[in-house]
Amino acid sequence: MIIWMTGLSGSGKTTISTKLKEKIVKAGFSVQWYDGDRVREELKIESDFSKEGILKNNFEVINRIKAIKNGVDFILISLITPFDEVRKYARNTFGKEYFEVYLKCDRNTLVERDTKGLYKKALKGELDNLIGFSKKIPYEEPASPDMIIETDKISVDSAVNLICESLDILEKE
Image (cartoon, rainbow, N blue to C red; front, top):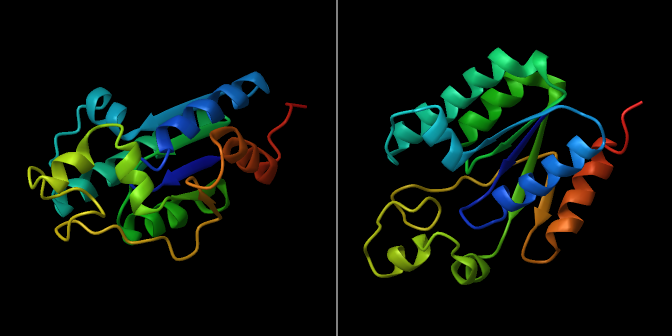
């Protein structure tokens, strides 16, 4: 099962996937986790934050998943994934094994959280390509994700529990 979490920077992708990974492992399943920052660092994907660079990065993640998907029970992806074409390609590639979670969060909360200082830089004009915040790189909201979690309205633990309940991740038989 591939659980693909998409959403803007600060929407909770890393935080939720970290807790979800812990819960899945505790339930006795094997997990591989790909986070946007870790992907760029560990996989040494050389791309910039242009549309082309983002697409290259996202498609490379899909290729990596294809290579390992049969070796683990769950693969967690926490990646902004701003373009619908990538999410559609992932869904077509992995079929019923693909579960897309859109972590939706209002703009004010994202700016307040600003865990990486990106929104502050964008507001100062120091960053002109913040995905979904600047006009340069839009975030195309998922048209039909398997689940929408409004992370500005519920806790991290509640979000993790919603995903686990939806996928019946409790205990390994």
